[in-house]
Amino acid sequence: MASLNYEIVETIGVISESSKGWKKELNLVSWNNREPKYDLRDWAPDHEKMGKGITLSKEEVENLRDLLNKK
Image (cartoon, rainbow, N blue to C red; front, side):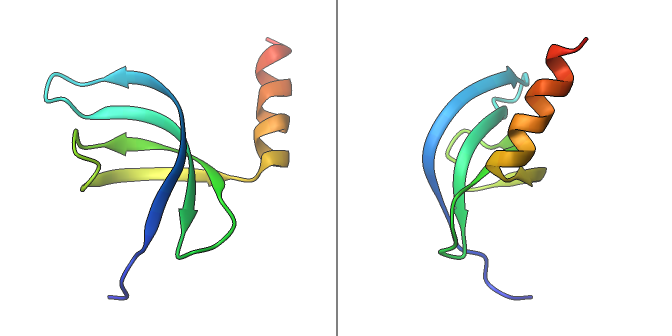
């Protein structure tokens, strides 16, 4: 399995927290030194472990925002 590099460029906010301390966060993350993308996933308290998540471009986040605002 290939090595995975990541850098949390900006923490935007915490959506929820589990009883074990893991937090579902929205962050701007650079994966493998690429352009940062919006990233939504669960993180361990030390940010050393992560759960499955999704990454979105700025355009995709704006489209998601617009969809949610229509509700």
